Figure (tube, helix red, strand yellow):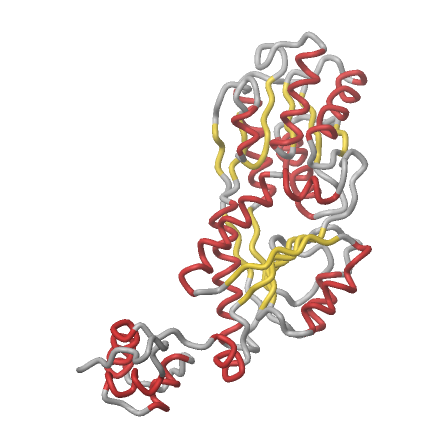
Length: 348
């Protein structure tokens, strides 16, 4: 194999790559555009020639051939919650969204696929749909779970490949990746009982989303199976401020609570502040277990015992499932469920 350096300071051309590899220009084009019909040895020869000549494919021209943008949208669709300062403030400060972004980016980067982050609430769904319809991205990773959100169905009806970050609240034929939420709540309940807690309560997540419902149901059903009757609960919103407010209301109504399951680490951080402000010791007077194992768990004092969901791995799996849908249009929807684990620290 021989190589020909670029002349006159110009970038190497596809013809030079073809000459260096000893193949036709059409074969080089098929390799660059990922055609599966090219022999593996020829593909390797072309790829070596590309590296040796320093040829850089024209992305715009390649997109015309493949009809792909090599970009994927991460659409974060969230309702406005009572305690949230602003929608964007929550999106960019909640560790969950950062972990999703990191996991998806790590999975997409080796494939030269860019991630476009699009936060949205119900007021600008039409702008998101218009952007997706115009073909700016090849697929969608969608974070949406509340019952009244119409975006998952709208994306589904567009026919663009998409994967949802949790079991959809409304039934649609879409792929999704989730964690076993009920099992996670059962792990929390079992741990609190093993510590000797007998007056248990919970701050749930929003009850208009499956995760909030499942964590509450899992906690209550496990305790019911162990002979516990009504378990006090207050509905939270997955924010620190919401967790603090809920804990104050819960302990005012049930001052004898000695074990508290909080359905997110951010809420647990706020709840710990409320418990301690009320003069209760953690974990001696009130043991507290969170959910997520996010960076917030390590910001808590004492350090938070929590249920870990492997968010980065889940996001990477979402990206892999999405790339499979992009590569093979018409694939049947697929669901993947990860297993949670309990991380024991100082709060329980």
